[in-house]
Image 1: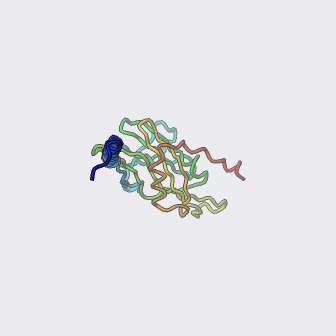
Image 2: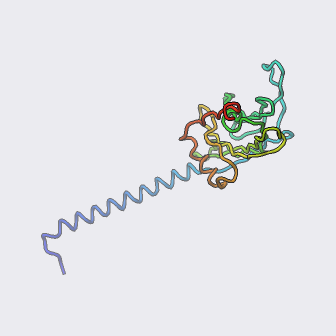
Image 3: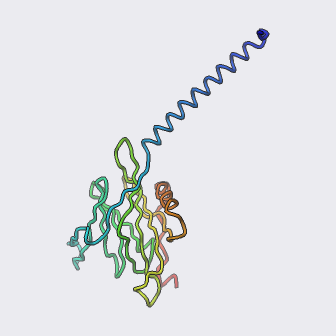
Length: 205
């Protein structure tokens, strides 16, 4: 049974449009799949343990304060430095030897602190090459006045890493988010601003 002639043009048009939409949908799916494959994000871990890093002396410091140079990934290294009495922070050094202080003492905790034994790098795979996009470090703060030996809060310090710099974007109290949520924040950190400075202890009191 054939359709009347007056319906044929509309039928042809519908078939052409349906075919076009199917083609676009398939092409879009292939493009998304290719992008996803090229931008897959993984974690790599490096040590921050003192006995696994190299100790160096800062010749520009009148006190010649020692600091630790720890291995990184993709040509990056991490320097662990005593930035104030009892306060530790990390400096990200990129392959071009540019240094980017993360200033944990300003944006994570104003109190004395210790760092975890490892750094977690979030790595984007781009055409088979590892590109660091974020760094996660555990910061153990001793924030109770009069008890500097007691760890009172633990934070995940999330820092974005870009070709032109690095800075902390998120300070997350341990237990407030799952590990997967912390990593998701790290993976999107590049789109967020650097964290604002915390009030100084005298101002916060």
